[in-house]
Length: 349
Image 1 (cartoon, rainbow, N blue to C red):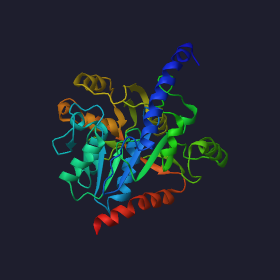
Image 2 (cartoon, rainbow, N blue to C red; image 1 turned 180 degrees about the vertical axis):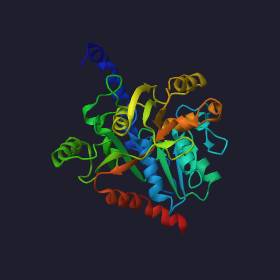
Image 3 (spheres, helix red, strand yellow; image 1 turned 90 degrees about the vertical axis):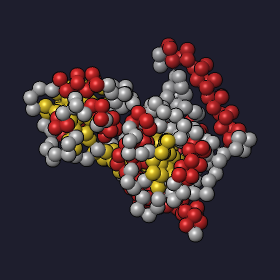
Image 4 (tube, helix red, strand yellow; image 1 turned 135 degrees about the horizontal axis):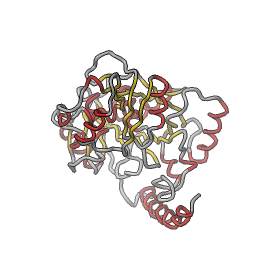
């Protein structure tokens, strides 16, 4: 550990003390949590950065939307608006945030997508404008304790387990590790597609001190689909330049190396707000026969109308991803349904 991180330990200790007092006050009921008549499923993490919240919420949407009227509520990180906003056809990543816009672009005809930095107010407003909603999925809500979810999912990355991490600013944790015990289930995301029994047992052993139940840990991987051209033409890319704005793009980059010839890798900061000169510069790099391959999260921003006259859709591709469980997926699905059943049945009666 570097000298700078050692010097930052007092700040990390202070940060942990403040967040622990706050959590204690919630645990004792001294700070009240809002409860609602419809079921709420929360998804979050202990660490800053990407742990796979977006594909997890999308997994839940696919699981539930055929039987329930589903809504998502996010903070809307990076948006230029504030307060409550219900996604509409004229919205874009700037008005509601890139991840909520991805939900809306993929599922807007099937689910309601809303944003509000105040989750309690957001749920109340959502139900006011969409009284037919039966289940709300709360995105990035683990530290936002003003609302009590009926089921709480904690995500942690296979290569960055929270058990090996430290509090900010020394590490990436937003609260002490014991906060994981609030979770009803833990999903270890971004696991290798093949995980042997020894590796699985090691993970479960590391997480055991921070879990309430022995069977609450699930292992999941990222399942990549075929690259999709921006104009939807069914022509696969052969030589590409990778472009991404992710907290950690290593898995994306490593996978792309296995399916195509990568000429260059261009990385932007997580949630980067692309400008016209960025798009033009990227396009100017392309030689004959080359394309750009990016993530679905980036695609929803790059397909914005402001780039319509610049971006050559025939040379841009994105790579869709899905959350896939290595085992016990049916067991996880059963837990989700059991978490929402009592309230959802009451709401329908």
